[in-house]
Length: 345
Image 1 (cartoon, rainbow, N blue to C red):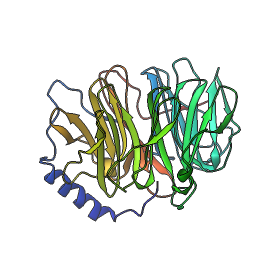
Image 2 (tube, rainbow, N blue to C red; image 1 turned 90 degrees about the horizontal axis):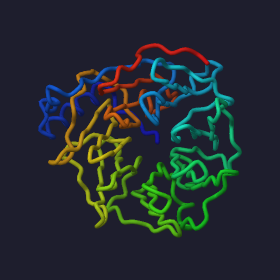
Image 3 (tube, rainbow, N blue to C red; image 1 turned 180 degrees about the vertical axis):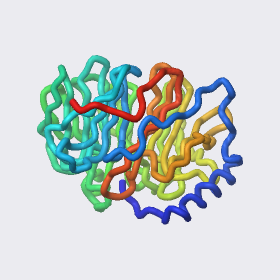
Image 4 (cartoon, rainbow, N blue to C red; image 1 turned 60 degrees about the horizontal axis):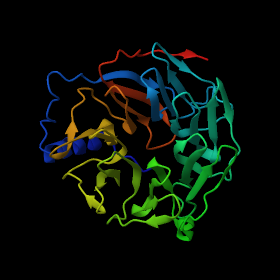
């Protein structure tokens, strides 16, 4: 998911220009009664690349390995404080997904998948050594992992976990092996699963078979998510690409001047996307618009999550080039969340 970063001064100018094209001064302010954004963490030793939670009392964010002997960043919020968990192996983690009450799965480089269950964090055996960029499951015994070789022209893969072991998914189109990377997987149920990746790749799984879906683009799609109304895929390279499918196929809904988006999350008719240079976009009845967080940022967001209480979380850092460092986490919501410090497990 790496690209060559635009020099920071030019990048900031580009973002200002993008916000202008989107009709933002810099962006319409949220309603006065809406919570303000706050920065929970900044300049952490490892980037925060993914975030997921069951509730605001069970939040997980994972990311880069700062090389300090504790493995990749794995932070958990229990409703009172943050704790960093020591990993059983080294290497960056790119995604986290779990289930209320456990388990929680984390995937990353070298085919690594970690599972946290019953207070224990363990490394799982997997079918390969490509980077796991996305994880999602309909149940603890029906979990998907996708990934690839990043910038390599081949190597995309799809794995499934049946509660006992990980294996290559059955029925994946043969041409997927020539795809550089499958970046993310998400679904509404075991029979409604979406996968996106390099070259505008989109696949749908109906519980029995995979079907390629036309996206109308060859640009990389980094993340897919949705709700009962629509499926949303976002990506791009420098500038953004935003696609929506409301049941009639994907349509390009990218606003003019939209920055690259790497994360998206939809819930109950609300949707947020986040990406390049700390940009956050919110979907309303008129489409997608940049939202001013009020916090000056030079690094990038990689993931966004909406909690059950309506709060919005954006995780990032230096995620566009190695090493994956300078982790940051922003939050907007009504819940009081501990900020700035974490204990070690």
